Each structure stands twice: as C-alpha cells, then as structure tokens.
Image (spheres, helix red, strand yellow):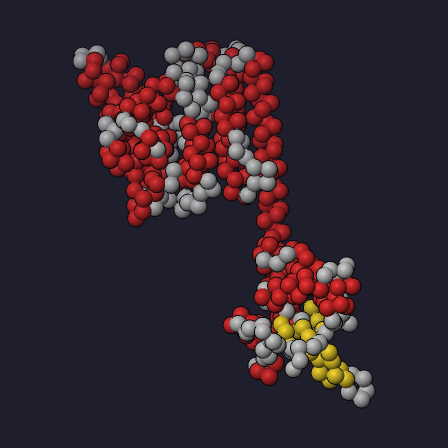
Length: 436
C-alpha cells in the first residue's frame, strides 16, 4: 500500500476513520484496473437509494467527472480533477457554489470521492517542462474505480427489486380486476352466496392501501386478494358442478349427494376453499378432534345410535379441511403468538397450533369451545382466531364467549376471518415476523 497518498483535509474540516479507510481502499487498487467513467456514473444513478446520495449530488459528480479528460478511469493515472467551484457551477447548470460545496461533502462522506488538498486548500496542478501534470491537488476519482464492482452489484440489485415490484403490482392489478368482475358476474347471475360480504372483504383489503406502497404492503395485499379470488372461484365452481346436468346414472347420484341443502359445503357463505388434508401437519390433529367430537356427541345423545356419531365425525372432518390463510400473513397480523411457540418462534402450522393450545388455556377458553371452533373453522383457522384474540385480549372480557359467538356466526355464514386479519395487519403496521 502506498501510504504517501494518505492526506488530511484542509482547514476546519476534520479527518474521520471513514475518510482514512476510503483513502486506504483507493490506494489498494490493482494496477491494471480500469473502467468507463460514464458506465460507473450510470450505475451510480441506479444505486443511488442504496448509497444515500441525492440526485443533485449526482449532478455535481457528473460535472466533476466531465473535467477528467479520458473516457476511462485507469489505476495507473493520477485520477485527480481540480476545477474551481465557479467552473463546477457552470457545468452544473448554474448551481450555487455554497450548494456545490455541500454536495461535494456528501460525495466525500459517501466514499465516492477523496480530497487531496494543497497547503492552502486551493485546487491546482503543477506541470513539468513538457506541459505534463507533475502533481495535482483537488478531488481523486480513485474511490469510484475501487468501488466500480460494488456499485455495479448495487445497481443490479436495485434494478431487480424494481422489476420484482412492477411484476407484483401487475399481478395485484389483474387479481383485483378478476375479483371485481367475478363478484359482479355472481350478482348478475343470482349465484348463491353472500357476495356483498365478499365485496366488503375486498374493500377491507384496500382500505388503507397507500398511493405509493412499499413492497411489503403490496405482497400482503396480493396474498389476501389471491386468497379471496381462490375462494370465490371455488364457490362458483361448486355452484356450476351442482347445477350441471349429467346423463350418467352414477354421476346423477353424486350430483344429488352434493346438492344436499344440509351439506356444510353448500350452506357455506364465507368463501373458504376446501383443500386436501396434509398428513404431516394436521392429520393427527384432525383425528383427535374427530374422536373428541364423536365422544361429545355420543354423551349428549345418550343411546342415539351410530348414525348420529358418524354424522358428527363427518361434520368435524369437513370443517377441519378448510384452507387456512398464508402463515406469513397470520404472523404479520398476530405478532404476540410467536412468543408462545417452541423457542419463542413459530416456523410452521404445527408450531402455531401448539402455541394456540397454550394461549387458549391462558385466556380461559374451555376445551369444548376450542374443539367446536376447530370443527367449524378447521384447526389452522381456529389457531389463527386464538392468535387474533390474544392481540386484543385487553379489549375482550370473555375470550371463551367471544370464540363461541364467532363460531356460531360462522355457522350462520355471518363471519369471515379475512377482514379480521386485514384489520389486525393495518393496526400493527408492516410486520417483520415471517414464517421460518
């Protein structure tokens, strides 16, 4: 390292460790290193948010780079430019000299320039007999060359984030259009279902959606609206299947079975999609809930026979198969539940359901009330409701009574979990906790 290139600033300007580190880094450039100065500047314009510099500071840097005569920055050259503030002002579209000095200080602090001040603080160059520059005092562009790779990487990351954001917004726009048109079609065709509740859930998702949202808000809104679209499509699919005629006798038999008005699927008004059970996460829980539900039904009916028990078991398993909301969305809305997971964190639905059992006991919710909620909502959604109740525990007098009321309202088609989650997300602001 050539330590003779290390200089301190002139006058009242103080030397910092960051300035010293920047000068040492610039002194360690490979002798063969070179890069196009305007390509570095273009990458800087892309990476500006990551470097914490303003567009006006970049305008000053552009004017400063223009005083370097060559198009490429090479490590073998001095890379010192020495224009006066008046000259910089002319090339920076008449920017005031005081403003130029302020932005030069920002560029130095960001590690994009280093000062090489003369004894009196003036910027000038000494030339030899042949007219070549022997020594110059001003601003060194070596930090730009030394950080060319880093700047290019930051620019690529910013561009990738911008592209990802644009694609997410496009998906969100298409999904919003689909939901509105599907609800409009269902209302015009007179399809069975509480479509006004679906409209309310749509409005709840975008109630506090800002004009320029962050990526986290776009992602959360996209997850919620995609979930709503899936539920609407599932409900319409069920409607079409139950009304479609069939010339096959076995198919007609299945049609009659699915058209049973007492079926929990056909009477469902909460737009929740059915999904196959996952044996690794909820099979054991479903079986336990089914057995407990059958025993409870048998105790209440006395000698009611096997038909009542089979009906109770079927209803419980039907409720336990409902599709849960995305786990990341639940943890973003309900942050306190993570403290009751294994090791103070939740990384799967199994962890969330285990934490819900602990919280249920702590809130005084009876096992029967929780089992009834699991039978109606499914174990994952029941655990989600317990997590929401925990967030508002200070405003709820009786958690058990509140859970039973939500369960009975859901059975009548008067309650949907989506608006509750979105309201909690808006109350918390952007969440940092995600599923591991």
